Every structure is written in structure tokens, then in C-alpha cells.
Length: 141
Image 1 (cartoon, helix red, strand yellow):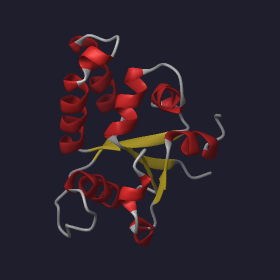
Image 2 (cartoon, helix red, strand yellow):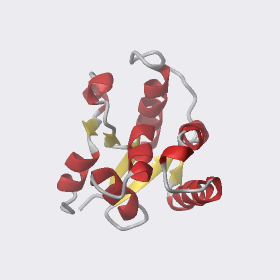
Image 3 (cartoon, rainbow, N blue to C red):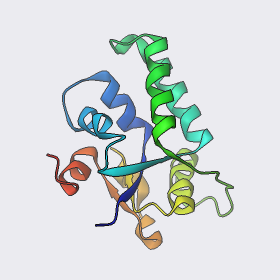
Image 4 (cartoon, rainbow, N blue to C red):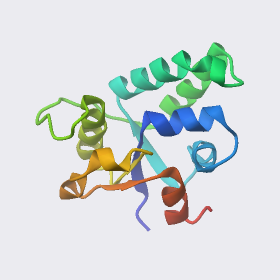
């Protein structure tokens, strides 16, 4: 079976850190397993950091703990540079960043809660799923 290469949107990471209940948290706990490979770029990591730190008071975590989680994600992910060669494709530049990363890395899935923002990415052979849909796909729900 081919290992899914996945880009995880910031909204899924934030959701996982806000609550230990639900699919986002389960997905975060499955990172680093043999179920899938996450792919990151420097701009995406910076976005994770900015959004999560901005919402730190809503979590039960400290800034240091958030840093440790992001460091862990960086340590277990495939790293890919993106070059912004064919933008814009989507309405939101941040979503274009995710799409560019997915295409560049040969990912087959983007996990997000904003599926409507990714209309048309199937042209690139990429599926868009929520965390719950993805966990169901890999057989862990």
C-alpha cells in the first residue's frame, strides 16, 4: 500500500491544540506513525507558529510546549521548498501556499476544515479531506 503524503492546514493543527477530543487531535497523535507522511515548508511552519501562538491563551499549553510540538512536526516531516511558480489558483494566498506545497511534494491529500476553499485542486490529483475523513480513509476511526 502506498503511503499517503499529506499537507495539514493550520486550522487542523489549531483545532488539535484547542481540544483533545475529535479527529484533529487524533490526527496530530498519529503523526510520526507509519500511517502517513506529513510534508512541511518553511512558510507553512511559520504560519503554524504565528496562528497557534496568537491563540495560545485558548489552549492548555505554554509557548514552550507549542514550540516543542512544532519542532516535533518538523522533525518527522518531509521538508519541501516551494517556489510560487503558478499562483494564483485559489482565492486565498495562504491556501495557494498549501496547494503549491502539495503539488511540489507529490502529495495526494490536503487535510483542512475549509474544503470549499480548495475547489479545483482535483486537477492536480489532490483530494481535500477533513481530519475525520482522512482518519476514516486510513482506517483509524
